[in-house]
Length: 263
Image (cartoon, rainbow, N blue to C red; front, side):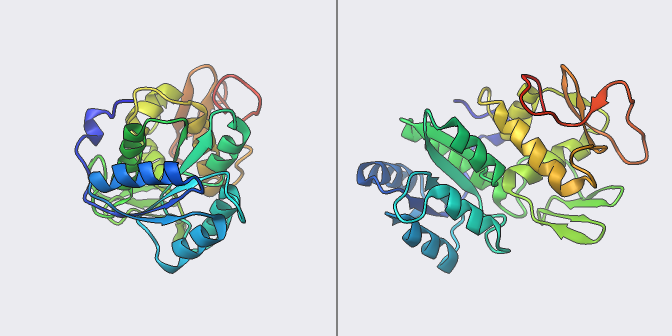
């Protein structure tokens, strides 16, 4: 996969925790990330990985789903349930056939994933893409300052979002997606366009976008099942509707499961 020009250039080195029980995979991943300039810690099972992530919060976690002791999904669930782990950038390593677990991982708040067998260079690119976006004070696209829409207030430099004065705990991708939508109100974007302009990838699994839209609705909508801010335009994509401008009733609808189009 190719990163778009908007995400070109390596981020500054970070501390990365790799949790994988396969010593060969862990060694290869560690080697490539180290050569890319990062400091890498390793854990060979779930309990050790969770303990290291909590004791010494990394800049990013590379997490295998199939782990002894505690599996990757449970680690992700426990981390996202804490204030310190709610916004920890996470890239999953998944088996190619584990689509259900992959989607569940995204729903639990993973920022990205790579399927095994994978290209180590692709993993490095994905790690650096997520890491770059997570860095406070260094947004991917510095498109101006603070954005206020209704009771939502987004600060791109601090990478913080408040709703009604209460801070929202967003993952890296959720923040980027909300920032993009807030800056392009009343404009419809397809899932492919969002994948390219928010994720920075020319192609990928479009269900990733669907899941992140659903998670974002759960945090910014009064009723996620009947969204009024992030609307679905059937057969096209999604649109952010500022609260002071009612969305046209004939083109919006709540999310639906089990369809080929966006949810």
